[in-house]
Length: 258
Image 1 (cartoon, helix red, strand yellow):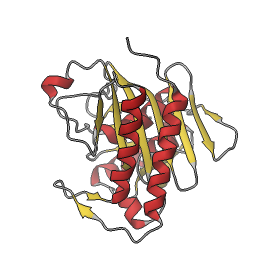
Image 2: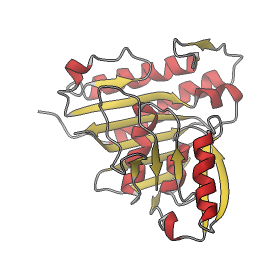
Image 3: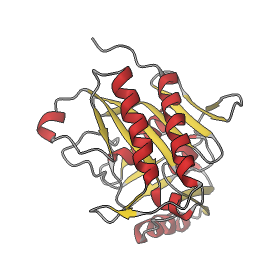
Image 4: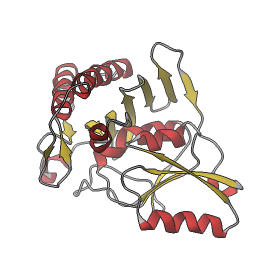
């Protein structure tokens, strides 16, 4: 019997992992390069250790996928109905640039859908969280939590705020923006790093996030949960269907947060 997951447990784990990230952030850290050429720092490893230890201790019956842990073969995980999906440091490039736009992401996925998500931005102490049926929320420091309500769909707005990656602007995104302009819309461009882009749409600071470039499932799952509970959708750009998780390939298709 799987015991009920407590969102406060996950929030606490994310913040403790964020403390480890900040401890490295303030030093002259070194940057290694992984096989896929993406950067890796001691902060990734330390954050991952905190999260894995805590989740395995509190919820030993729930399996786990993390960016920094060897991926379980699909033959095994295809039978998982419920599992954790973790990115211990999303936005390592932003971390290396020291611009503060990086996050700790922890999601709980059930039947391919993220039903719980915590996104923690250590710089600024910003916390986003959501649980199925309980809404999406944001807080800063010890401040009061604010419920996230998403906003009006961008298709019916005359002025559209488009959020895009600070490190991964693609030609496809420019085509998307040009398409909005051709419809007579005034486009305001907002740049941000890591999973914060999905959160900006969830809180109504941005209207749409076209991610027309590669991402992995652990990059998006936690913030996807926040977007869903705020009333937003994350859809496959090609099919228009909702983004799903635990595919044979953990690479996401291009998607739109709207």
